Image 1 (cartoon, chains in turn green, yellow):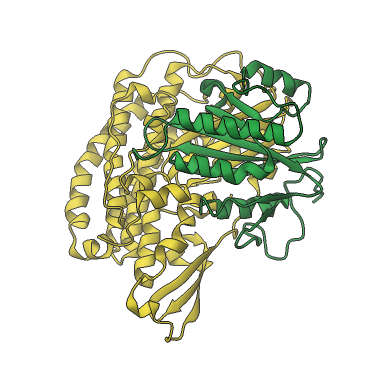
Image 2 (cartoon, chains in turn purple, blue):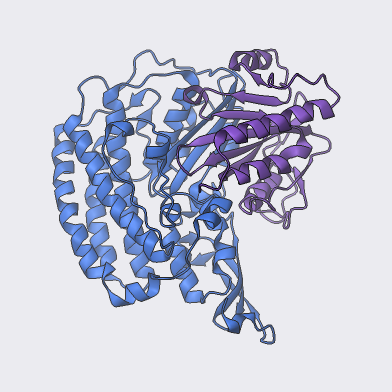
Length: 185
Length: 372
């Protein structure tokens, strides 16, 4: 366990990654260090109905249930997984959220550190609902295989490079993705 | 992998196990490629009792989702309702009275013992010993009766409420629980004498399918599987919730990683749960068991909420996304056996089929919990 990176290093690496995404997306890149925003500003932007920008937020564990909330670009998920893998984190789950109004899917990767004091990090990204594709992280965490398969099953999000993207919990002959908000039974 | 299985000159054949098969403890199916008696590849096929609880959550109010929570893991449902209670209380900022938290801990721990007893009986039965399950059910019956007297149900509990519990415990429950603690403390050494020391059981469990801590981490395995591989991780200690910080208990950890280690973790955990219950009964505070002023219609502020508990099978956690309305926008259920079973394919490659089934028993699977 002692060969793993400590939480502070992880935090800095993830923050760097998230800020990189800001610059890459052609948006105004914040000065380094300003990626850590206060939790209130996040809540504010959510109230206004605007998805927040890339960046890292330290959340209040008592109020939210996780310590770090990282928003990155879709092409960065594998690198984020590699960083957390080096930190000795385990992948708890992967899930999707359908934001129909914004025509986007949100993907949330929940990581937890099971060595020593518990530390939870939620890594999230948004992809276009019309082109729901994202790279698989099952090369980094083999446990992601089933979670990604389930997410494809429920949302129709395609994980490129996934070894076995087939129906999992739903029957083989299904032609729908039930957790999409526009799904009609 | 055995040299026999590695030799590709031998012909392989496909074997289908389940979905209706007594060894799979429910409707779980395995597609197995066999080389003689050795497994080349065993692929679990899930979804035979999939009910889409996550979609159900999206069309009902927060309150109406209670009954769904006890239908995930019907063997230890209390811990799952505990997670939902904690999640919604966190999202709405509801304070829970101390007495209610104590009662929650007592009932959850009783439920955990009951779940482990069932696992123990079934594991030994899977290995060919029929008698132990009768003893296990004898003990388990006492717990079910106790829980029925306060919760009104024997398996699918809907006992917790946002801000407390629905019914206070009475003196009969307390004396009954104390008597049970005494009874099980006498019984467990007997179980060790009768079963754990048995030469056949040792042969079937010791050294079978050792899982490394690294493999557990990569697959997200938790609970007794992880603790049997030498990782001291338990949500009750590492991310304390409810009233757990107030009790003195140990987390059993074994380093071998084999089926015997997982067996021993669960056997020791029962004794630790007894310790927790005893302390909770001794220190049980007076007061209300339900928070007053919990609004009838709950509208948590928009945002994400996460809550994790230590269920009998590992970390059960929930993620709720609220859009500020009175129904959840999205509920994600993270079930421990789902992640624990995902390592099955890699772990059983090259194993004897009979050993793989014993290994599966040591994972303690509950299928509805996995399929959700």
